[in-house]
Length: 246
Image 1 (tube, rainbow, N blue to C red):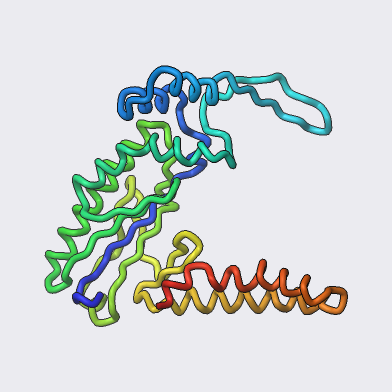
Image 2: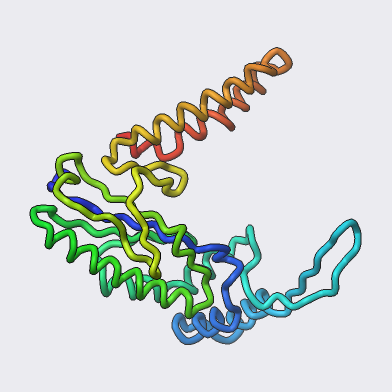
């Protein structure tokens, strides 16, 4: 924005990403792409393969069935295996765009341009859509669930810069995704002017609700317990990503 540029920011939605990892594919990726062999590979195989699951309904159990996909939720190794599983995805993105961001199963694409003429915005959008098409194709081929309609599209710039462009939507798998005014991004909120006003308003509202709840039971709490609750439910949220507020 300081360079008088506009940013197209796309947040991709992967549904149940950790549950859809194909065991055979991740083992092949580890062996042939990252060179994991011998005892280390056998250890990971024993970690992933031959797992069973069953359903318990009022102490009535279903038959055991094999778990052929996914990594154990809440495990330390799960996110690492997922990142290795999708590592080739960023090679695809790099062929189209100079910038991307990934955190576990959260993938974001963004590209900057000067909105001096309409051709700039249209050509940049075409590059972005080509990238999304290739990303979507790769994800589906690797049995990852990509929700086209849940993709979010944010156009970031100053009010003056945004007046120079006329982008109605971005094409994601045949679904036209219209720009939104704000998006939730890893627990924070970004708005189209990066004013952080949406984020501040939501944090204030959340802090007020939590303080109101604590106030209702304050007379039953010691000072230390009250401080602990305030830190857990109020200040921890206020402090989260506070560096963005500069």
